Length: 294
Image (cartoon, rainbow, N blue to C red; front, side, top):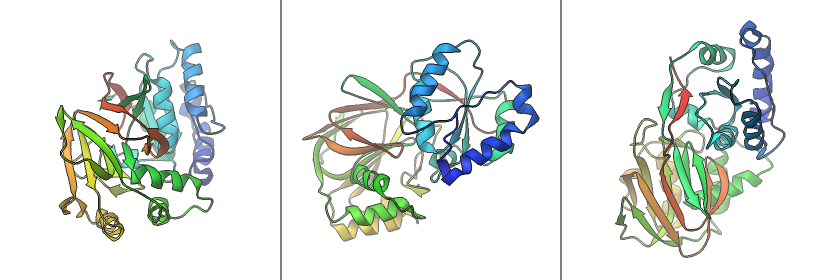
């Protein structure tokens, strides 16, 4: 599954090189391209429905958004190994999963490697629907920034930071009741909350340094209400790993999180804009098989 627009066309170039690789024909691989937002989820769901018995593995060429769609499209289906070839602008999942190789070399690794890593991804439920996330689920300022970044016509080297600067003037903190592993937090007002599966988000920002893709718990980053200049300092300090030392920043471990906001708030799931109301988050009940590293 390839997003031809990922990485300003990088994914499409990789696909063409892979199609010329002898293994592509030997293994009877077939390629499919997404045509727009949400198409990856719809397409993989349809393909699995038609070819359940013949699909040995799914290879995703693109960014975190494409992988997010494919994983959600596979949710509820029999477990199928997933191989990821990073070709987006952020590639935070590749960082968190320590995927070092790319392009044709990564394709060969996925095809020839029989070793699978079983991961419990994040799962959130609201409005009677379950959704899966690989990297993180964020609410509050994080969601507002991602929404602003998605609307940017001019792509920057650090899209998250650029969108942050544009979001600060209009952002307001939110009020919510938050419960982690059945313990209610004493704080009621927040700048943002990020539930992380691994350390990285926003194109390599190490937002949850205690997190690991192999952990059975989330790292929950709680940011209390703070002034705008302190928020700026917070994000500058992320690049140096100092942000969790700040007085109003807390990194808490947990398997189950409930968020009950006073009103619907902006959020993000793997960098995709979402709206969050009453929401329950947990590690997914089903383990997802990934082909990560040899």
